[in-house]
Length: 283
Image (cartoon, rainbow, N blue to C red; front, side, top):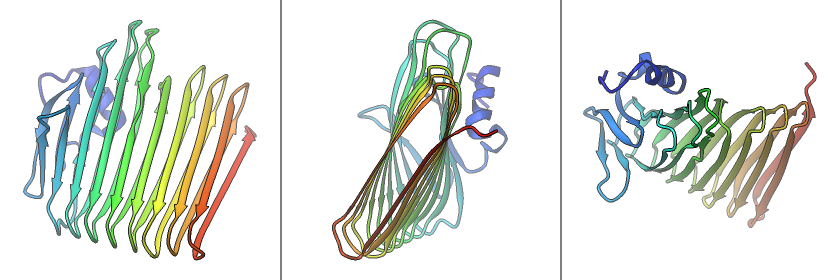
């Protein structure tokens, strides 16, 4: 492990990326706006971008299975970190990607990370993507995370995305976009917890262009104190396809949750379902 990583960094990495598993497979660690440590394998290459901040990750076709860790940590108050990461997953490759960002802020200035991730899956590729967000620190400065995820699935490929906001994030706008071709599957599972005056907004936008494409989007959230959450789900069925979107929220105290479903069938064989439930804490 790099000498640039101290005890605070290790705690953040443990929260978002399971530190003991970091050395399994390929990885890239980003701290305070710069890459500080990287490892590649025979099947996974990680290339630093030259035109903007971020990395390109290339996975060879027919990769049987591989772990890729790409954690980001911020400990510098007042920093606004913006990064662009592109994933190119070869035909029939299978990988698990563990991302996430941890922010430690003990001062009065805001710390913010905006990660823009794009996934390009070739035919038959399978990806499990795990993203965790975590904030800590005693300072008055806010911890802000605004992830954007774009997923492009070619025929017979699939992606499972698990997104979890652990705690300590003052403000977040989470945007996820999917474009699906035939016989593809995109599964999204989101968990969010807000308290105090925290704000969280989630926007899903999935377009099913191919025959027998499918998606299942699930959001589970808890809002307490005077925090606010917004859930927006937009699904477009342009062919014979199936989609199921659900939002299940629990509120207590004076919290507020708004769920806005939008499903559009542009084909007579598009089967689209949305469910939303908001209820008080019954514990």
